[in-house]
Length: 268
Image 1: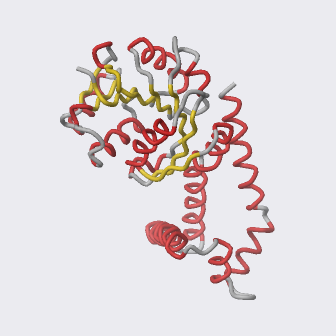
Image 2 (image 1 turned 180 degrees about the vertical axis):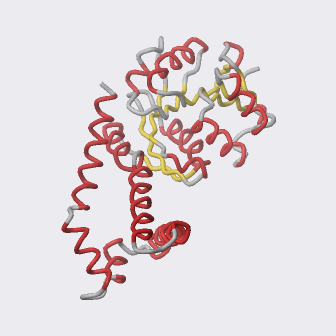
């Protein structure tokens, strides 16, 4: 049976994509397949995604003229997975593999293939992800629209050129970890000032969520919203003065630069 979409890799990202596509009714369930080598994970996916084909391998009969594939495997398995897709005749690929260029995927195919490279982030697991997409050498607008429709089921999508994908990786791709570190530090700070860890966590996580919602709802710049909280000579001003003195802003600039460079190294 030929499927409309095949997700190669049923780990956290692949399963989140599948769940988002099923919820969005992107295609009939029986037109969606997941290829997963782990017996245990196949059993888990079979229970969670009733009606979706969960298979151990990709075969020729699974691919038709309009079948697309999503590469959701680890970087060291990605080229082998791409060769598998090429051998079955897939001609449209969406790759969410960090550091793997579209050119390297194109190179394993015997003929032209539309490769859309993407960098999503982990909030796709709760359908709040932010993903960037970039087209390879043979990609058309229809291919980008197709990729956006898939990733749009689990969040928002922006389009960039491929030379900017490494920067996206260093910024939004890695950004959840940066933010969790900030949240972790602030919870600890509350505890150090005498709050219980549970109360501190509620205060920090709730404020984090509310601040993001306010930023989105008002359309105001972060600078404007920060100024609204910062009274001259007040408590917030004292805290911000300490953060600026410890070069927190510069540390974030350097963190994104380091992650971006590491993404470039992985792609070489």
